[in-house]
Length: 150
Image (cartoon, rainbow, N blue to C red; front, side, top):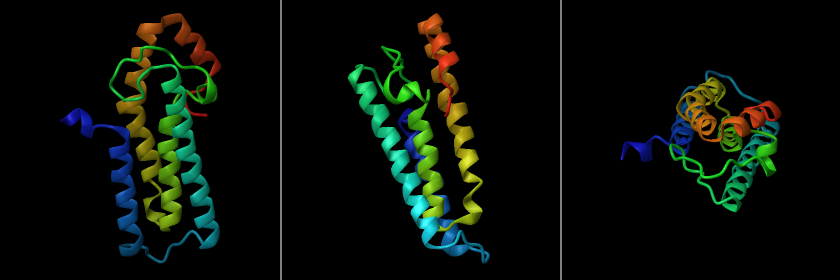
């Protein structure tokens, strides 16, 4: 049961709920500035969701899992994975940043690097270690060509 709770969407949801709760109850007179923050927030949320969808599509095409904590049957390096080794996690961070802007939750901004840190420690590093063991030289070449985030 704990494995199904320890997945990135749950961490994203937790951070989003904290940001949503901060905005109306503890604004402290701080604001991002109305319509432009809403617009940029929408762009970030949309971009994050698009990144996630492109990554899942690419992984489904290669018939490998996109579920964390599972071993990949194939190393995906094409499509969006040629730009970022972790587009789904990058999408999570973009969605949170966009929601914080949309909620006008200025004090919740530290949640963005905190979520990034949690995703890296709990998911990215263990996944990359599994890929490094399974695909050895291919993974090393991929890491040389493609950055972890952007």
